[in-house]
Length: 392
Image (spheres, one colour):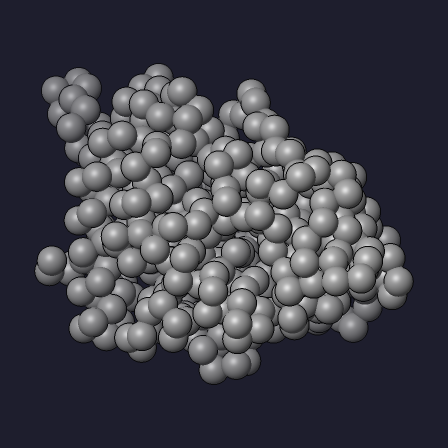
């Protein structure tokens, strides 16, 4: 499928990708427009995740990018960011599903797993044979996960015993396995475990009444004497620094996802304002609407530029926590303004899913907070530039 930059890529950043990468994105965009876009509004309204999406995503080849076990062709972090962008400009919930499956779950195994764990799990995640979830956040531990994690792990012979609870875990109501992060009772270090969801003592309960990312099936997880073999511990996950090495990559991709949400809202508003006739002409012909459109486009263009640079730094091995933290904080803030302006330009029609901006507007609120709030990411940046930690 031929690739052309979308209207929200005003500076044609995507043209810097390789021919193979652009071809992949063109095929992905066609698949999303044909198979995902027509079904998301209905499922979003009903707070249900479409059963067809995992298969669609698996056939599209999005999961496993960056790992030789699953996607042998060379691709850049910038390209992987663009896949998140393309997914999110159609639907943030679908992009979040992929972010969990590919970034957090496959990422945990790709970064922290042994060769045997990579060989066993990465192909299954890429093919959709296995759906994964990522269990870090807890009811009483979100921003302070580095020190405040309460879920425990205790070695007992050839097994580990896990006890505790997790909250806001995406995909968890239908996942086959979950990466559980728990604090070792012996050394107090955070370690990661591959836990099949069929394991006795593991339960997941859907979180109801959400106003954002309604398609995403978030769950509360309870772990009561959950026993897993020693081989289920991620070999290279032995402290929260190892957890952070996963989050450093995914936080940058969340910035890409936020830019995609802003782009989806902007493009929907652009279509609406060029078609909506008031006082005998399209409302896009008015100064106020054009001012809003230009503001949205500026936000998106600046966001893409920041995302591209952070991804380049990741490929070069130069990206640090503060780089991805600044990108996530800045881009989600610009996203929040953009979706609000997009909704505003649609007037009353902006609060229903029929016209697009309403769904993006609601979903943006969750993306603004997950994988690190703006305030916490600003503190990560502040510590880097001042040399002083302001964390409590």
